[in-house]
Amino acid sequence: MMWWTSFRRERNIRRFLIALSRQRVVLVAQPGNFWIIERAPTGMPEQDEAIATCRMRGWIDVLEDAVPKGEWDAQGMPDLQRSFKRTEPLYRLTDSGWSVINRVQTWLIATFVVSVLAVLATLLYQ
Image (tube, rainbow, N blue to C red):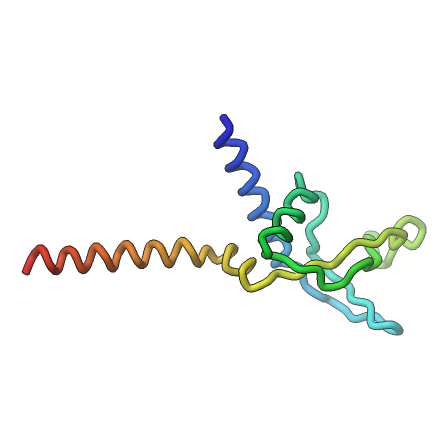
């Protein structure tokens, strides 16, 4: 059962990377050039472990440290009573993080295997 736990953890890490790639800046609030970011990953299972693993593997970097974090109410206004009282780092994907999302290594291996099989087929059937 150890392989299943490892597979589940890797899947959660990949889901976190995909969720991180979907965040986007919607508004730059003035004064102060505050970024309003939507679709930021929050509340994912084992998110702290996924962040630590991604940083260790070099898939994400800290873009800004101690960014105010909060939520919006139903009317689209910030809830100043309970929001924006905490800070968290803002992360960005590195090139290797994008490669993991796009499964570049898997494509390279598959391409290599197909090309080796094509060479072998050519040599055998000449």
